Image 1: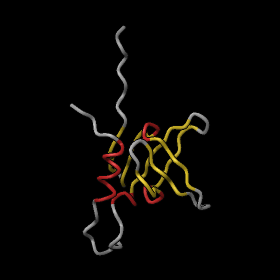
Image 2: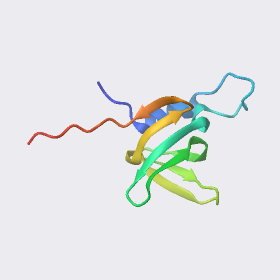
Image 3: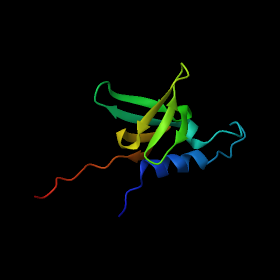
Length: 98
C-alpha cells in the first residue's frame, strides 16, 4: 500500500472548502490545520496551515508574523492535525536488511 505524500495531503486540504456559512468563503481546511515539524536545532514546532503561502514539489513556504518567508522541506513534517482529528502521520521506518 502506498503511503500518501505530505504534498498530496497539503494540496487536498488546500482545495477542500468548508460548506458552513460561518466560515469565510475563501477559507479552506488547510487554514485550520496544524503541522508538526521536526528540526534538529530547535526540536519540534507547530505551524498553522494558514501560514503556508506556497506548496512546492519537495517543500512549502511559510510566511511568519514578521513577514519573512521560510522554506520547509516536506520530509521535516511529522504529523498534520485538524481540530481533534489526526489527518496524517509519518510512518515508522522499518529497519533495513543487510
